[in-house]
Image 1: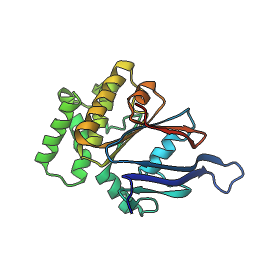
Image 2: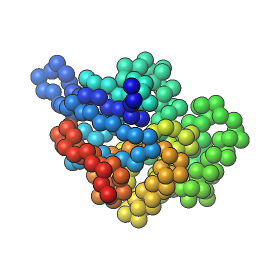
Image 3: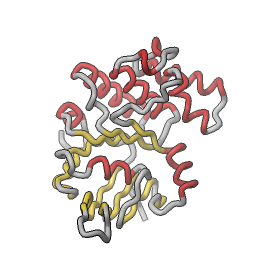
Length: 231
């Protein structure tokens, strides 16, 4: 049976199930993504974007349905296997950067590769390569507190891509950036997508991000309102 790179099959998420007040964050969502896509999931606040991203990345479990990555079911995996899957195959970029404040940019970028057991020389070579692509090579020795928001977000992107994951999930990556920084970040992520073939899925309500996507999914009230391939 043929399968897409990432399949979301009949996913629903209810917060407070069994209680009187239930929140239906996602309702019966089915989506599929091919390898190497550049995708945005957009919609108003509260439409379920972050919840869907977290379920696709194995950070949260659905109430119903399943997610398959490269044909392998990731929903219901025991935590140890799920942690390994996230470490080795999925890169995350968060709105709040989530850099480790006591580590330099280089150490933050190399963190996941070190967890994977890569050699020191490979970590150093790859962190330099990614930093140059993202125009942050001069920041490698700096701590997060010594950088602007835009610089921190580029370091976060570098950390996400350095270990060459199959998939990057980026939750509102431009939310805390000015328009110039946001444009620069999106241009660089688009180049990474094209140069390295990494599948990148964003959640956003930023028109700039939405305009860059080659596959656009609109969520409303936890349901797919549109699934399009613009231009």
